[in-house]
Image (cartoon, rainbow, N blue to C red; front, side, top):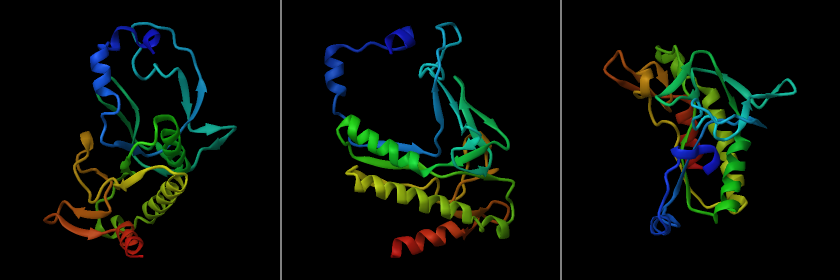
Length: 210
């Protein structure tokens, strides 16, 4: 890591390192999708950043097959030093197994810390009417599959204590404003912020009651 990151990696004193070790109350995991990773070598240079430090090429396909079901939305395609680089029409691939795998890996690698899933979900664009906005069956299936993955991780001994959907209701999202909808509840921004439970909210209600 020191060889790859160089001067961008701060150095800690022995005392500071001792303060950090074991100091977390819980680990928050934000999970949306996964990628295939292949070894790559990036030469050290002026354009190196945390996007190249991992020394991998990421792809959503292998041997012509996508990693999961595609959800055609407006997504964060990759990170830049300044902000998110957002592209229109780039699919998010649904891969719940990746959530289970990263949870089990964290347990085995880092001594089974307390974990909360602090974000999980996806957004939709070009939806302005209530009638279409509340019919989000794909989101309901998304959460059902990912909660099943969390249950499998718990069955493998992972200390998961909570799960937060992204988000409870449609909100202001980064530089997308109100154009991107992530919520379980549809908010009608043109009519007094009236709120309507989506199919995913009704599924969650039934799931929690059972």
